[in-house]
Length: 431
Image (cartoon, rainbow, N blue to C red):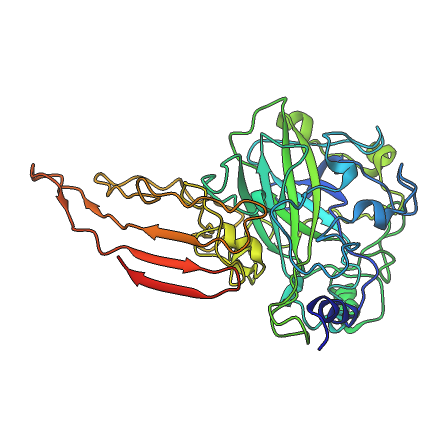
C-alpha cells in the first residue's frame, strides 16, 4: 500500500499549473466618484516586472508568497507557525524611492491592484478551485510584527475582537472583480476587452485594448487611523482546493498568497490630489496602464464566499480553536479556554464595519477549565503511560436583575473519565 506521503505528493503533481500567481502590485486612492486620485503607492519590497530582486530572483519569485511554501513537498495544510509575509516584506521598508508607500486618508477607499495571471480568464485550468477565484481578505493593524503569523491574522474580525485583537478585518472581495483580464484571446478576456478596454499609459486610448486590465481589491480604511502615522495592511488571498475535487486529497488543500503593505496616513490635500501621468511618471511601473477608474461597485464589494477564512480550513491547525478542524485530534492541555473560530457576522460590505457587540446586563459566569484538575503533559520517553482526563462541568446561574435572590448552583453531573493508550485504545466511564 502506498504511503500517505506518496499519495499526497502524487495528488499535488496532478494539479494543473498556472506558472504565475498574484500579489498586490500597486495601490490607488479612490475618490467619492470612483476615480483613482493621488500618487501611486506600492507594497513593501516591491520588485517591478522584468526586474530582479536583491536575492537575484525574478519578479514572480520575489513577490509571490505562497502558503504553505511551494518547496515544502507534500505539505497540504498550513500550521500555526506559518509566516504571513514574504522574506522581503517582513520589515516595514520600501525597496526604493521609486516605489513609495501610498499616501491615503482616514476612512478613505483604496484599490489594491494585481494581475489575474490566468486565474480569471483560464478557470478551466483549476477546476478544483472556488468560483470567482476564491476570496481576498484584507486586514489592518497599527501593531504589525516582523514575524507575523498567518494563523493569528486569520482570526481577526470586523469588530476587532478576534484572535489577539491587534487588528481588524477590513474587506472581503472576490478575487475576480468582474472586470479584469489578461490581454489574451480567451472568451472571458475577449468579452471584457470590448466592455472595458485597457491601455498602456502614455498611449492613445482608442481602438483595441493594448494592456492587461488589473484586478483590484477595494478596502475602506478605518476612520480612526492616525494622521502622519503608518498603517499596515495584509492582503491575503485564499485559493483553497476544495474537498473531494482532487483524488488523494479528500479534505482539499490549502493555498494562500499574501502581500504586506504599509500606507502613510495624510490629509486629503496631500493624499487626494488630482495628478496626471506626467506628474507621476517617475513612480510608475515599467508596464504602467492608464486605467483611471475603480470597478463600478468599489464601495460595496463583497464575496461569493463571505465567511471567515478558517471556516474553510480543513487542516489540523484548527484543532487549536474551539469547534474547529475535522482533523485536529485532541488539543494539548493549556489550562485556559481555547479561542473559537471567529464568525463573520452579517454579510460583509466594504462600506460598513460591524459594531463592537455590547455586553448584556446580566452575564452567566462559566468555568473555562475544570477547577483543580489539570492533565500533566506527557514527557519525552514516557511511552505507554496512560493519560487520564477528568472533566467536571459546573454551571452557575446568575440571579435575574430585578430579583435579589441568591444564585442557584446546579449539581454537577458525574465526571467523565477517558483513558487513552498509546496505541489508540480508549475507555470511558463515569466516576
